[in-house]
Image 1 (cartoon, rainbow, N blue to C red):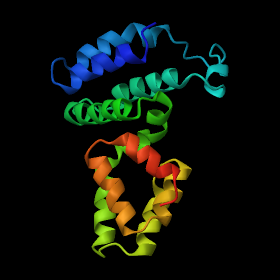
Image 2 (cartoon, rainbow, N blue to C red; image 1 turned 30 degrees about the vertical axis):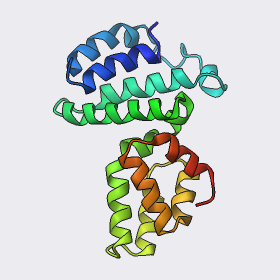
Image 3 (cartoon, rainbow, N blue to C red; image 1 turned 180 degrees about the horizontal axis):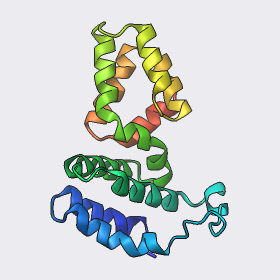
Image 4 (cartoon, rainbow, N blue to C red; image 1 turned 90 degrees about the horizontal axis):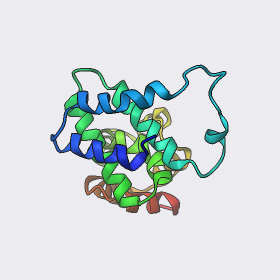
Length: 174
């Protein structure tokens, strides 16, 4: 079975416009067909144990490709480029998998932060929006307690695709 870095190479070609989504889906078809969809046939152990970060990220990326609407190839190209930048920056499938909700929501997050910083969204409104987002709990906690300069710094890192820096920021007190 192809691995994460085989898929990453295909997605890099997709992001660069060298191949289309249909070619990625055709490459993935045998992989998806070989995976048992029946819960009774699926082994849950790999998902419960540590050490399967690459496989977890692989399947999340497969889902990303398959769940993107047919007319969303441009958005898919943008999203996979950002995910691959995260993987390169963090050098960790586990960190990339954990940051995936932020990576895929980067533009909206920084728009919300900018509006909050300009006073368009109140502190209460900002906290309410954060509560609704599907970010990892530690990221939500960090964002809830971050002051203006820390929020600006995380959005600057996001804009620069410096996801390794974002991961380290989220591990420390803002």
